[in-house]
Image (tube, rainbow, N blue to C red; front, side, top):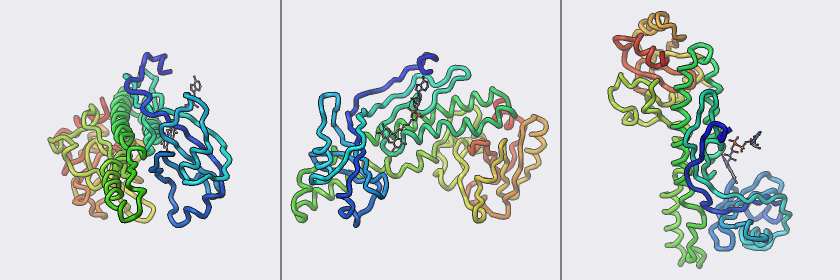
Length: 350
Ligand SMILES: Cc1cc2nc3c(=O)[nH]c(=O)nc-3n(C[C@H](O)[C@H](O)[C@H](O)COP(=O)(O)OP(=O)(O)OC[C@H]3O[C@@H](n4cnc5c(N)ncnc54)[C@H](O)[C@@H]3O)c2cc1C
């Protein structure tokens, strides 16, 4: 399909040849009991890489960095022994050679064809930025089936175009930084010396991990904090300054950002208030009737939700919040703008 619409990957290939292994062993059952984890980093010259349990019955995955199966037969027993620090009685269930790639398509859409997931962008998968970014591409398309019927194709086409390109670029930045520090980059011979001597080397490794791996392990902002600052269907007119200069995503409403999730009562959050069309959330005492009248006049489907009782205005930094069905804030303000009809036409792409 990518070829059919004349799109091409642009970027870099063959960043690192790697070998994925899945194996079964019970020799590790008692070794890692005190430090159970879903992922272990292997900082040694024999098998630099990552490994972790797939289940609680002795099935393990292992990614060995720098192993190029294309160059000849691979000794999987030696790779597993290098990872564990001793020979294991292990049965290899599968091997999967793969190469990290860093590529983005030069175009992700042609008329009604949209490229999503790996078809549109290939990241080194560290940090869950592979499948997750693909799912991130798909979610708005499912959620926007409502507006397709209600608002027309022009709005949807604009929305999808802007969203796909921005999300892919953001995911790509994350992937690039994660691939810049693999366990093979953190190996220091001195770290394996007796504890007292190794202390300095271990502290240095710890510092490097904190500096270089934050993007991989603290990536909630990538999943939830994206913001569209150049969208033709988002309005920043209330603040008059770029949305990116506003407060952090988690606590404040930002035009072009995701509506913050705040629990209103057990099992019911701000996100549950968003309908299948535009929703106006009234967080304070500002009058919502100009929006209701303008929506009727312009023909934009709009529901209004009164959240005054929760006193969220100060916390979220807005009195009125206009939210799209994909949970993105189209506009927010202290009161309805003078020309509310123009605002609705703008955010609906009419
Ligand atoms: C070793 C490794 C580890 C990874 N770890 C993670 C991780 O921890 N977290 C994470 O988020 N991501 C991870 N990823 C990345 C993740 O696997 C991919 O990003 C994800 O699978 C992409 O999904 P997709 O649906 O876009 O593409 P694919 O999974 O490639 O699916 C495309 C499907 O289309 C089929 N197809 C292709 N051409 C045609 C055709 N002409 N007709 C019909 N069918 C066709 C293919 O056979 C395939 O089944 C990892 C990847 C690798 C290689």
